Amino acid sequence: MRKPTESAGPTQRQQRVAELVRHAIAEVLSRGDLQDPVLSRHVITVPEVRMSPDLKLATAYVMPLGGEDEQPVIEALERNRKVLRQEVARRVNLKFAPDLRFRRDETFDEAARIDRLLRSDKVQRDLGPDRDSGE
Image 1 (tube, rainbow, N blue to C red):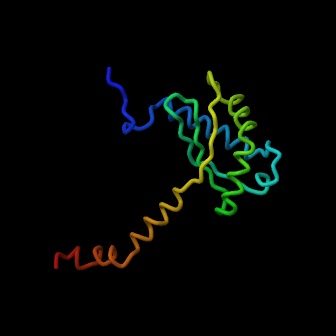
Image 2 (cartoon, rainbow, N blue to C red):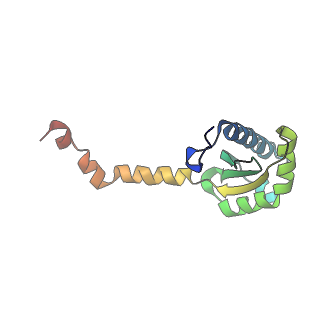
Image 3 (tube, rainbow, N blue to C red):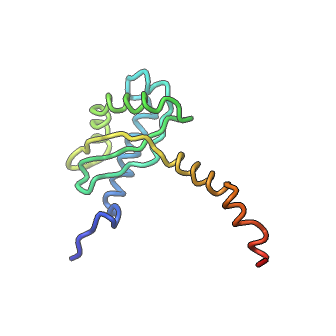
């Protein structure tokens, strides 16, 4: 039997558990179950959670709506990590509740960077009408 390599990406089980954990965290945050003044002032999206291969660590990528106060929000999530972990354990049926860590979601920044590249003069020149006509 072949061992999966790190470059093979997450297993189906990792992806399934990550999605369950993502839903659990998002539900706790949307319901306002945490009594934290920073978190209560923000709508927080959780676009992705990645699980370690042993399913004992969940890295949640988060972004406050509008991208405001990112660092205070992540710090507040870290402060409330224990309560969030308990809530995830209650909602997701796993042998062990995963440790949680929170990171800023950078996919919006990456999308904006790609968009800027595609709109750059150099790329537009390469995509211009002369290229299609074969001249």
